[in-house]
Length: 154
Image 1 (cartoon, rainbow, N blue to C red):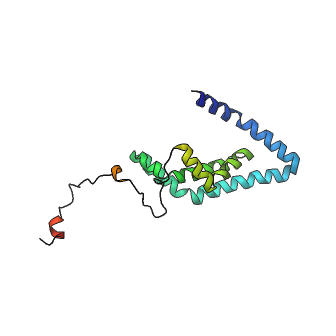
Image 2 (cartoon, rainbow, N blue to C red; image 1 turned 90 degrees about the horizontal axis):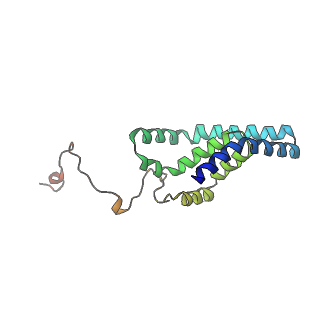
């Protein structure tokens, strides 16, 4: 319950913190460059979601429709990239820094470990998910003909 309350408080205070950081940055470098950095961060988030996140969003949609939540865990790296794109899209320096931090691979691996996700279960670039022997079993498909005898030459 404490975590939920802390998270709600942080999300409520985020706009005020973003405004304070924006004012501090604008005083340091000027309003124009600070506003330009905000726009650049939002543009980067939009590009990341459009180009890098499209396939992740479609995989997420298919997994949720099929109720296959293990596929979501296998594609956790894609989820972190989507989160980075959303954080970059939100205007503000705090969310931009958090979004950029999610794009750094060593920090993303640390978040994998912190979130309790196994790196071995992460989706490989070739689409293969390696499972331990106790995590899978062979299930015969009743719609396929039994071809064991044809393979043996009988």
